[in-house]
Length: 184
Image (cartoon, rainbow, N blue to C red; front, side):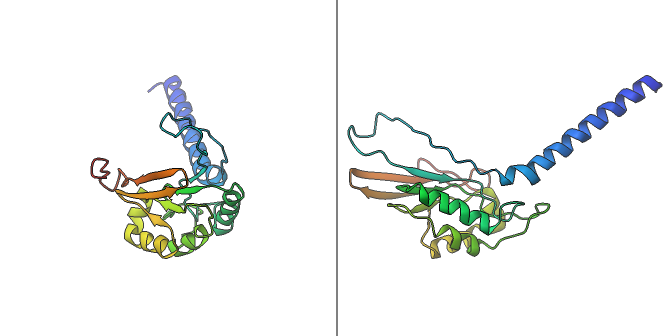
């Protein structure tokens, strides 16, 4: 191999290593500390005209125990959600971590205790994510349900609202389970 080709190969290798390090830094040190609070209005023709809009708080991929996201941070998020006075809270899985560099495992029962402080008119509902199933899906479900959080895994729940009935559906994780829309 000539010197010119060797230098190019070295430069490309250094660039790829640099990009890999930046990706790891983002995924481990920066992204876990970013909590996004957004309000999104969704218009649907199926919502009865003149009926009160439904405020739904959605929390996803909490990965409690990741760098910069411990139980104290979770409690701050819960307080932010409660301040928004949602009608309903939806938790979309991946509550635990395991084997994350600079992370610290937090028991699902502790996470469930913090999430049990969520307040809404119609309750808190959850599905489990792939990380939850990889750790102990049935145990996480028990922890959540023992703290009043309804877990839906290919299940539906009817909510009787002042303006009519609303059906919530929770599907199984498509990585570790068998989502079954037709079976609902």
